[in-house]
Length: 82
Length: 182
Image (tube, rainbow over all chains, first blue to last red; front, top):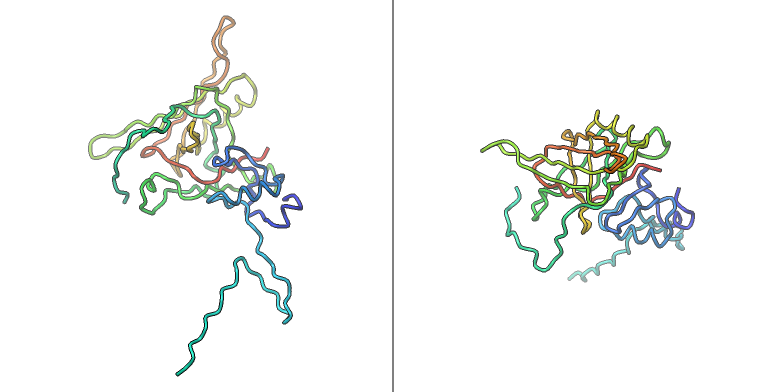
Protein backbone atom coordinates (compact mmCIF):
# COMPACT_ATOMS: atom_id res chain seq x y z
CA UNK A 1 0.00 0.00 0.00
CA UNK A 2 2.86 2.39 0.82
CA UNK A 3 5.28 3.49 -1.88
CA UNK A 4 8.13 0.95 -2.04
CA UNK A 5 10.82 3.30 -0.71
CA UNK A 6 8.54 4.26 2.20
CA UNK A 7 7.50 0.64 2.85
CA UNK A 8 11.15 -0.28 3.40
CA UNK A 9 11.21 1.77 6.59
CA UNK A 10 7.57 2.26 7.63
CA UNK A 11 4.35 0.27 7.92
CA UNK A 12 0.67 1.19 8.15
CA UNK A 13 -1.11 0.43 11.41
CA UNK A 14 -4.66 0.99 10.18
CA UNK A 15 -6.86 0.78 7.10
CA UNK A 16 -7.43 4.51 7.46
CA UNK A 17 -4.93 5.83 4.94
CA UNK A 18 -6.34 9.26 4.14
CA UNK A 19 -5.89 11.68 7.02
CA UNK A 20 -6.07 15.36 7.83
CA UNK A 21 -3.15 16.44 10.00
CA UNK A 22 -4.36 19.57 11.75
CA UNK A 23 -0.91 19.92 13.33
CA UNK A 24 0.65 20.25 9.84
CA UNK A 25 -2.35 21.96 8.23
CA UNK A 26 -2.93 19.56 5.32
CA UNK A 27 -4.34 16.24 4.13
CA UNK A 28 -2.18 13.20 3.43
CA UNK A 29 -2.88 10.06 1.41
CA UNK A 30 -0.55 7.69 3.23
CA UNK A 31 -0.29 5.46 0.15
CA UNK A 32 1.31 8.31 -1.79
CA UNK A 33 3.55 10.04 0.72
CA UNK A 34 7.26 10.43 0.21
CA UNK A 35 9.93 9.27 2.63
CA UNK A 36 10.41 12.85 3.85
CA UNK A 37 6.67 13.19 4.50
CA UNK A 38 6.64 9.87 6.38
CA UNK A 39 9.44 11.14 8.62
CA UNK A 40 7.48 14.36 9.16
CA UNK A 41 4.31 12.47 10.07
CA UNK A 42 5.81 10.03 12.57
CA UNK A 43 7.42 13.00 14.32
CA UNK A 44 3.95 14.40 15.16
CA UNK A 45 3.09 13.49 18.77
CA UNK A 46 0.16 11.07 18.96
CA UNK A 47 0.15 10.17 15.25
CA UNK A 48 -0.23 6.40 15.08
CA UNK A 49 -1.49 5.55 11.58
CA UNK A 50 2.09 4.91 10.45
CA UNK A 51 5.02 3.51 12.35
CA UNK A 52 8.67 2.87 11.79
CA UNK A 53 9.51 -0.78 11.18
CA UNK A 54 11.66 -2.44 13.82
CA UNK A 55 15.32 -2.45 12.94
CA UNK A 56 16.47 -5.95 12.01
CA UNK A 57 20.07 -6.59 13.00
CA UNK A 58 21.84 -8.96 10.58
CA UNK A 59 22.84 -12.39 11.82
CA UNK A 60 25.86 -12.23 14.05
CA UNK A 61 28.69 -14.69 14.19
CA UNK A 62 26.77 -16.93 16.59
CA UNK A 63 24.08 -17.34 13.94
CA UNK A 64 21.31 -15.63 15.90
CA UNK A 65 19.16 -12.82 14.48
CA UNK A 66 18.09 -10.06 16.84
CA UNK A 67 15.13 -7.74 16.34
CA UNK A 68 15.24 -4.53 18.27
CA UNK A 69 13.68 -1.10 18.29
CA UNK A 70 16.10 0.46 20.74
CA UNK A 71 19.80 0.36 21.44
CA UNK A 72 21.00 -2.59 23.47
CA UNK A 73 21.46 -1.80 27.15
CA UNK A 74 24.93 -2.00 28.57
CA UNK A 75 25.49 -4.86 30.97
CA UNK A 76 26.04 -3.99 34.58
CA UNK A 77 29.37 -4.79 36.00
CA UNK A 78 29.22 -7.33 38.78
CA UNK A 79 30.93 -6.46 41.97
CA UNK A 80 33.74 -8.75 42.86
CA UNK A 81 32.63 -11.14 45.61
CA UNK A 82 34.40 -10.68 48.90
CA UNK B 1 -11.91 15.57 38.98
CA UNK B 2 -10.38 18.55 37.25
CA UNK B 3 -9.37 21.54 39.30
CA UNK B 4 -10.12 25.20 38.68
CA UNK B 5 -7.28 27.44 37.49
CA UNK B 6 -6.74 31.13 36.80
CA UNK B 7 -8.33 32.60 33.64
CA UNK B 8 -5.72 34.83 31.95
CA UNK B 9 -6.41 37.52 29.35
CA UNK B 10 -4.97 37.54 25.79
CA UNK B 11 -1.48 38.47 27.08
CA UNK B 12 -0.52 39.69 23.63
CA UNK B 13 -1.67 36.55 21.82
CA UNK B 14 -4.16 36.57 18.92
CA UNK B 15 -7.78 35.84 19.77
CA UNK B 16 -9.33 35.85 16.31
CA UNK B 17 -13.02 34.83 16.27
CA UNK B 18 -14.69 32.49 13.78
CA UNK B 19 -13.99 29.08 12.29
CA UNK B 20 -12.07 27.82 9.28
CA UNK B 21 -13.91 26.85 6.11
CA UNK B 22 -13.99 23.05 6.38
CA UNK B 23 -16.33 21.14 8.68
CA UNK B 24 -15.55 17.45 9.32
CA UNK B 25 -18.63 15.24 9.72
CA UNK B 26 -19.09 11.51 10.35
CA UNK B 27 -22.22 9.54 11.31
CA UNK B 28 -21.87 7.75 14.64
CA UNK B 29 -22.45 4.34 13.04
CA UNK B 30 -19.27 4.70 10.96
CA UNK B 31 -17.04 4.68 14.04
CA UNK B 32 -15.27 1.70 15.51
CA UNK B 33 -14.43 3.71 18.62
CA UNK B 34 -15.48 7.22 19.62
CA UNK B 35 -12.88 8.30 22.13
CA UNK B 36 -14.02 9.92 25.38
CA UNK B 37 -12.38 12.51 27.57
CA UNK B 38 -8.99 12.07 29.16
CA UNK B 39 -9.17 10.76 32.69
CA UNK B 40 -5.89 12.33 33.82
CA UNK B 41 -5.95 15.50 35.89
CA UNK B 42 -3.68 18.02 34.15
CA UNK B 43 -5.33 21.40 33.42
CA UNK B 44 -7.69 21.03 30.44
CA UNK B 45 -7.72 17.22 30.42
CA UNK B 46 -11.38 16.96 31.41
CA UNK B 47 -12.39 18.74 28.18
CA UNK B 48 -9.84 17.05 25.88
CA UNK B 49 -10.60 13.90 23.90
CA UNK B 50 -8.25 11.04 24.76
CA UNK B 51 -6.44 10.01 21.57
CA UNK B 52 -7.98 9.47 18.15
CA UNK B 53 -11.36 8.23 16.97
CA UNK B 54 -11.21 5.10 14.81
CA UNK B 55 -13.50 3.93 12.02
CA UNK B 56 -15.06 0.68 10.79
CA UNK B 57 -14.21 -0.86 7.41
CA UNK B 58 -16.10 0.76 4.55
CA UNK B 59 -17.81 -1.83 2.30
CA UNK B 60 -17.84 0.68 -0.57
CA UNK B 61 -14.03 0.87 -0.59
CA UNK B 62 -12.66 -2.62 0.19
CA UNK B 63 -9.54 -2.53 2.30
CA UNK B 64 -10.22 0.97 3.57
CA UNK B 65 -12.14 2.40 6.51
CA UNK B 66 -14.84 5.01 6.79
CA UNK B 67 -13.69 8.49 7.84
CA UNK B 68 -14.84 12.05 8.30
CA UNK B 69 -16.52 13.79 5.35
CA UNK B 70 -15.20 17.22 4.50
CA UNK B 71 -17.92 19.83 4.05
CA UNK B 72 -16.99 23.18 2.56
CA UNK B 73 -18.36 26.14 4.49
CA UNK B 74 -18.54 29.54 2.81
CA UNK B 75 -16.13 31.89 4.50
CA UNK B 76 -17.60 33.72 7.48
CA UNK B 77 -20.65 31.43 7.74
CA UNK B 78 -19.43 28.76 10.18
CA UNK B 79 -20.19 29.50 13.80
CA UNK B 80 -20.16 27.39 16.96
CA UNK B 81 -22.16 28.45 19.99
CA UNK B 82 -22.52 26.72 23.33
CA UNK B 83 -25.36 27.80 25.57
CA UNK B 84 -26.46 26.60 29.00
CA UNK B 85 -29.42 24.27 29.49
CA UNK B 86 -31.28 23.04 32.55
CA UNK B 87 -31.71 24.93 35.77
CA UNK B 88 -30.17 25.40 39.18
CA UNK B 89 -28.57 22.21 40.50
CA UNK B 90 -29.06 20.54 37.13
CA UNK B 91 -27.22 22.45 34.46
CA UNK B 92 -25.84 21.26 31.14
CA UNK B 93 -25.09 22.85 27.78
CA UNK B 94 -26.10 22.63 24.15
CA UNK B 95 -23.77 23.22 21.20
CA UNK B 96 -25.11 24.74 17.99
CA UNK B 97 -22.97 24.68 14.85
CA UNK B 98 -24.13 26.43 11.70
CA UNK B 99 -22.50 26.74 8.28
CA UNK B 100 -23.48 27.52 4.68
CA UNK B 101 -22.65 25.17 1.79
CA UNK B 102 -23.16 26.82 -1.60
CA UNK B 103 -24.77 25.28 -4.68
CA UNK B 104 -27.80 23.32 -5.76
CA UNK B 105 -26.11 20.02 -6.58
CA UNK B 106 -27.28 16.49 -6.02
CA UNK B 107 -24.50 15.84 -3.47
CA UNK B 108 -25.81 18.45 -1.03
CA UNK B 109 -29.40 17.35 -1.57
CA UNK B 110 -28.53 13.72 -0.88
CA UNK B 111 -26.36 14.69 2.10
CA UNK B 112 -29.24 16.73 3.56
CA UNK B 113 -31.71 13.93 2.98
CA UNK B 114 -29.61 11.28 4.74
CA UNK B 115 -27.86 13.27 7.45
CA UNK B 116 -31.09 14.41 9.11
CA UNK B 117 -31.84 10.78 9.94
CA UNK B 118 -28.65 10.05 11.86
CA UNK B 119 -26.45 11.53 14.56
CA UNK B 120 -22.88 12.66 13.96
CA UNK B 121 -19.54 13.61 15.41
CA UNK B 122 -18.34 16.91 13.92
CA UNK B 123 -14.98 18.66 14.08
CA UNK B 124 -14.22 22.31 13.33
CA UNK B 125 -11.01 24.30 13.40
CA UNK B 126 -10.48 27.74 14.86
CA UNK B 127 -8.36 30.26 12.90
CA UNK B 128 -5.40 29.38 15.14
CA UNK B 129 -5.75 25.67 14.32
CA UNK B 130 -7.40 24.33 17.47
CA UNK B 131 -9.82 21.47 16.72
CA UNK B 132 -13.13 21.47 18.55
CA UNK B 133 -15.62 18.60 18.58
CA UNK B 134 -19.40 18.76 18.48
CA UNK B 135 -21.24 15.68 19.69
CA UNK B 136 -20.07 12.65 21.64
CA UNK B 137 -20.75 8.93 21.77
CA UNK B 138 -24.50 8.33 22.08
CA UNK B 139 -25.00 12.09 22.15
CA UNK B 140 -24.22 12.78 18.51
CA UNK B 141 -25.04 16.01 16.77
CA UNK B 142 -28.30 16.19 14.84
CA UNK B 143 -27.91 18.04 11.53
CA UNK B 144 -30.67 19.58 9.45
CA UNK B 145 -30.34 21.59 6.26
CA UNK B 146 -32.37 24.55 5.00
CA UNK B 147 -32.11 25.14 1.26
CA UNK B 148 -32.52 28.59 -0.27
CA UNK B 149 -32.54 29.11 -4.04
CA UNK B 150 -32.03 32.85 -3.67
CA UNK B 151 -33.69 35.23 -6.14
CA UNK B 152 -32.70 36.39 -9.60
CA UNK B 153 -32.18 39.84 -8.14
CA UNK B 154 -30.03 38.69 -5.26
CA UNK B 155 -29.60 36.37 -2.34
CA UNK B 156 -27.47 33.28 -2.00
CA UNK B 157 -28.13 29.79 -3.41
CA UNK B 158 -27.24 26.90 -1.18
CA UNK B 159 -27.94 25.06 2.04
CA UNK B 160 -27.52 26.29 5.58
CA UNK B 161 -26.78 23.29 7.78
CA UNK B 162 -27.51 23.58 11.48
CA UNK B 163 -26.30 21.02 14.00
CA UNK B 164 -27.25 20.67 17.63
CA UNK B 165 -25.69 18.50 20.31
CA UNK B 166 -25.99 18.29 24.06
CA UNK B 167 -22.55 18.47 25.65
CA UNK B 168 -21.06 20.06 28.73
CA UNK B 169 -19.12 22.82 27.00
CA UNK B 170 -16.29 23.00 24.47
CA UNK B 171 -14.61 19.70 23.59
CA UNK B 172 -11.04 19.71 22.27
CA UNK B 173 -9.83 17.05 19.82
CA UNK B 174 -6.08 16.49 19.44
CA UNK B 175 -6.05 13.13 17.64
CA UNK B 176 -5.69 12.15 14.00
CA UNK B 177 -8.59 13.09 11.71
CA UNK B 178 -9.21 10.09 9.44
CA UNK B 179 -10.94 11.10 6.21
CA UNK B 180 -13.36 9.21 4.01
CA UNK B 181 -11.29 7.85 1.08
CA UNK B 182 -11.77 9.78 -2.15
